[in-house]
Image (tube, rainbow, N blue to C red):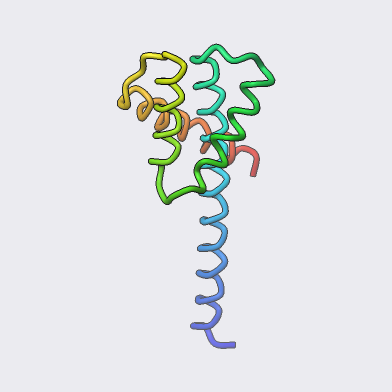
Amino acid sequence: MTTFDDRNKKFEKKFAHDGEMNFKINARRNKLLGMWAADKMGLDTAAAEQYAKELTLADFESPGDSDVLNKILKDFENGQVHMSMSDVRIEMERLLTVARKQIMSDS
């Protein structure tokens, strides 16, 4: 195998690893975000866990964070929780940092 082939294989492994880590980080962020939103809506522990799972699954509807953001905003509106889009985005960013630290420490 040539040096070029070795480099290519290493790059492919790193790319796959980075993709997996980003997936785990976003999934963890969504779970944390779901628990935060459930708390704002006054859900009990079991309902909060279920909501966090639903929010994590909602992330697969379309690329990016818009599906998660829209679900939370709609649920807040239905639950009469007064929270702006900016407030939710700020919490999403904060929890992304928390999730990244958690996943990196687990690895």
